[in-house]
Amino acid sequence: MLKNVTYFSDATFAIMTTMKKAIAITSLLFSQAAAAESDIFWLFRELDGSTNWQYIANFSSTIFILALSFMVIRLFFSRRESRQYNRELEEIRAQLEKRVVERTATLNESNSLLKESNKALGDEITEHLNTTAQLRQSESYITEILQSMPLMLIGLNKENQITQWNPRTEDVSGLSAKNVIGKDLWESYPEITVTPKQIAEAHEKQSAVSVKYSQRGQYHFNITIYPLKDQSVTGVVLLIDDITQQVNSETMLIQKDKMSLMGEMASTMAHDINIPLRAMLSSVKIVRQGLTDEPFDAVALREALEDGVIRGQQAKSVIENLLDFSGSGGDAKSMASIKDIIEHSVELAEDVLSVTAGLRFQDIDLKRDYAKDLPDLPCYSTELQQVFLSLIRHACTALGKVEDFDHKPCIHISVTQLYDDLWVRFQHNGKAVSDQDQQYLFESFTAGENSSSQYEAEQRLSFTHFIVTEQHQGQIAVMSQDDQDTTFSIQLPLK
Image (cartoon, rainbow, N blue to C red; front, side, top):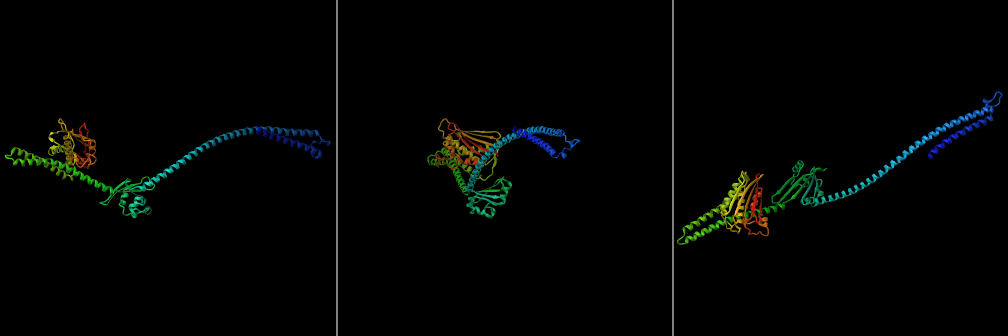
């Protein structure tokens, strides 16, 4: 409103100024007329030369009225314009106030967003600092792993130039990392056993390539070459593991196991031969003693000789079985019937195991349960015969240890097929195998506090385990409890 008053006063001032100018002009005209009447009022002179002042006054009033009317009209339009200007100014003021409010709201929102952005930026900087610290820690950890790795680690780029050379490699090669980094591998270390062809093979396959290098009696290495994938710098990494000590230890262990297995087999065969030989010697002593008697009993001598012949035949069967086994070691696997192998093992048991732990083999109830249409399997027949003979011997020994007059010894043999495997089960109702003995039953040499050099040979099945698992890629397990029968389960793959 103050602005409106200001504009109205300006218009009024202009009109008053104009009126003052008109009055001043009129007064000037009158003063000039008084001073020079002949020059100014000639129009109002009468014929007699006198001046008609009434006309002059009327004319001046008319001029004044016209000027005043003009001033009033101008004042009207000026006031009208001033009102329009005031309205426009009010609109402009409202728009400005609205814009100020909008701009203030925008600034507040921008400030809020800026605060949020600053907070998010601060959080991101904190996270970045944490990530940087973790990356540095991870880098330090990885570097420490590479530095402490007991394997030789060599990194190569696509031009086969060395990019990594860890301390273990420095120790083996005698070359420091600073002298070989960036140089060609074979120029820097020509003694290395890896060839460019093997490196190219890893690049071509885009997968790891394993190489075994051995210099008999001196060095053994496992070499792994794997390419780097999804990296800006392509290349390969070589891992070279010196396994010389490991191979030597394994070789010694294998030799020890072989000697233990052969000792077990020799002990078993000696045990099998010793029984008929002792009986045969006893028969010979009886015959010799009978021949000195007068008169001698021909019938008794004949029975003693017959018993000696039978025992000799049993010893011969054991020796022939041993010869067959020793002569079959280099043969290839052949297709054979599992039923025929088991039956042949039973025939050998009838000769070899005529008396075991005071129990005659003929007194054992032997049951057989073979599934129909059993397929032949690839195997070493003689070795499997040894397996089944050992299990029958083990069963006979356990059956002979049962101190029950009413006990009826029984061995149940069953064969079934399940998918691509044959399952052979030997079950007997003899003395159970203790939990502790089960742990060492298949060991290649005696172990444990209950094991000793006097451990009964017929109770050890390490050679049986070796034939089943190593030569036939199968499995063997035992289940035995005091109140249940003992069962040996053998799984033999058909393929």
